[in-house]
Image (cartoon, rainbow over all chains, first blue to last red; front, side):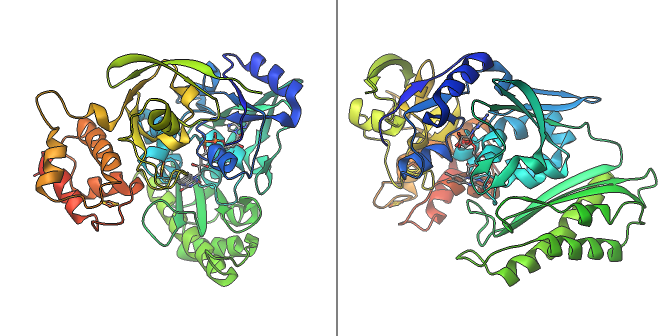
Length: 291
Length: 156
Ligand SMILES: Cc1cc2nc3c(=O)[nH]c(=O)nc-3n(C[C@H](O)[C@H](O)[C@H](O)COP(=O)(O)OP(=O)(O)OC[C@H]3O[C@@H](n4cnc5c(N)ncnc54)[C@H](O)[C@@H]3O)c2cc1C
Ligand code: FES
Ligand code: FES
C-alpha cells in the first residue's frame, strides 16, 4: 500500500473536525474488509486514514423492545448475530450479517461499512432497507437522518457530504406479526458476491391472514441497491396468497435493471429476482406467523 | 512523509513493542518486522485465510488488519498454538490424518479450527465446514482437514 498517516479519534467531534479539514485527502477505516482491499489494489488512495472504531457511539448496539435497535456503524457482523436478543428480534438482519464473507471477515466487517461502501451487491443493504432502517449521520453542520434506501447514490458512492460520518443505523422495533428475510443467489455456498439478492419484510394483521404492509429491496440488479417500493406496496391490504406473492415478485422483477457481466446475465438476474422475492416473502410470512 | 509508529501489543501471551509504518498490514508486521513467519500470505485480499490469526479472541485475516491497529490488543499466531508440553491436539490430529500437503494453508486452518472448538467443543461436520469456508486449500481437497477437526471435536 502507498504510505499514509493514521489517526484513531476517540470522539465524533474529533473525527468530523479532521475529516472536514482534510477533504478528499482522508478516508474512513471501519473493518477494512473493503477499504484495505481497495487501497492495496490502488483503487483508492488516501494520505490520511481515519480509524473510527475507537469512537464509542460507533460501537453501540442497543436494543429496546419499544424503541428498536441502534446499531453503531462500526459494530462487526459477529457481534450482531451473537447477540441473542438482537438475533431473535431481527432474523432478517442476521440473514445478511451471517452471509457477509466467512468467519474471519465477519470478525471485522461492519454493516455501516457495507452500507457506506455502496456496492450494488452489498448484502446488508437490502436487508436494512426492507426493515425500514435509517442512517444517522453527523458532520460539520450537525446531525441528519438519511433513509437507507436514499443512502447509496452510485456504485461506491453514498450521500455523505465532506466531513460527514455514518454514526449508527436505527431499525424500528419489530411489531407483532411482522417478519423479514434476506436471501441471495451465488454459485457456491459461501464467500461469493451476490448474482442477485432480495430482502423482504412483511407486516401481517393479527389473524396472520392479511398483509398490512410490506417492503422489498434488491441487490446486484442496478448501479445501487434498489428499493422496490411498488412491489411491497402491492401487498398492502391483500389476503396472503400465492397470487399476491406472485404479483409482488413480478413487480420486483420490473424494478430490477440488471446488466450482464461475468457473474450473470440480465435474463438470469431478472429471473432470480422473481424466485428470491417469492422465497423471501414466504419466509417472512412464516416468521411473521411465529414459524 | 508518514513516519513510523510504536505499537505495544500482546503476542502469544507476551507484551511486545514494535515499530511499523501505518501502511503495513499486521501480516507484514508479523512476518517482516517480527520475523514470525508461521503466518502465511496467500492472496493478500481476505479470500484465502492463510494469514488467519486470533485477535482478541476472534479469527481475522491479518492481511486486512493494519499493524497500527494492534495497539493494546491480544494476538495469537500459530507460533502460540503448541505448548511446552507438546503439540496442540489439533496439530497432532492434522498430522495423524495427513490433513496437509504443501502446508501453506495449515497455520490458518489450525487457528480457525482452534477458535471454533474453543467456542463450540461439539461442532459437527456441517458446522466445521461452514466455519472453515474462509480458508482455502489447493492440495488436500478438504476432507482430511475436516476429518482431523472432527476427531478432536466432542461431537458424536
Ligand atoms: C473475502 C471477502 C468476502 C466478502 N464477502 C462479502 C459478502 O458476501 N457480502 C457483502 O456484502 N460484502 C462482502 N465483502 C465486502 C465487505 O466485507 C463488506 O462490504 C463489509 O461489510 C465492509 O465493512 P467494513 O467494516 O470492513 O468496511 P470498510 O472496508 O472499513 O469500509 C468500507 C467503506 O465505507 C467507508 N466507511 C466505513 N465506515 C464508515 C462510516 N462509519 N462513515 C462513513 N464512511 C464509512 C470506508 O471509508 C470505505 O470506503 C467481502 C469482502 C472480502 C474481503
Ligand atoms: S493472505 Fe490474507 S486472506 Fe489470503
Ligand atoms: S496443503 Fe497445500 S494449500 Fe493446503
